Length: 191
Image 1 (cartoon, helix red, strand yellow):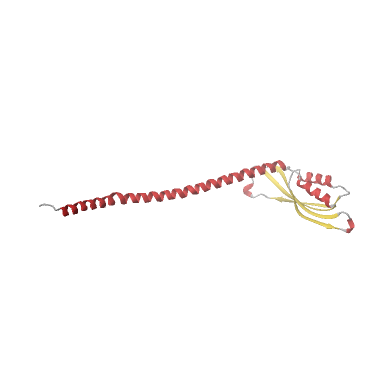
Image 2 (image 1 turned 45 degrees about the vertical axis):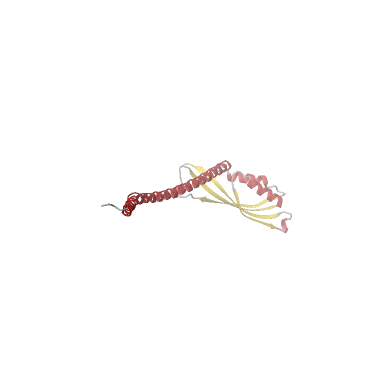
């Protein structure tokens, strides 16, 4: 039995089709699945990497902010007097009060104790006191400006909470100034 050329061609095509089917079934399809799995894992790894990069950038930003705040705290610590604030304030007031340009009418200090949150009490037992001062004085405008500028240069922070300036005919050429100030006094004590 002789095989005709047409049959030979069909046998060759069948063998080629079988080889292609076997290649697809046993090699290409499993490798495609592995490739898809690896692509998914790569995407997941890229997302995690991007997330970690964002965390790293956030950490750098936070570290820079912390360094800036530490510098600010160091500057504040150099500027803050411990327990001497009110005396220095009164000395400044006495120095600035010139009878011809600035007369103190009344000075009423009120002390408030600031309590720290319970979790914040550490080895240093710090007592912060807020002292509110209500002042009434008679002053020229220029002397008042110099006095307020002097408050800014004190070695601690004084907040001007309120300031009222009135022109009064009885005390011409001086102005009646009602001022509310507050300052924080720090006194260190050992437990």
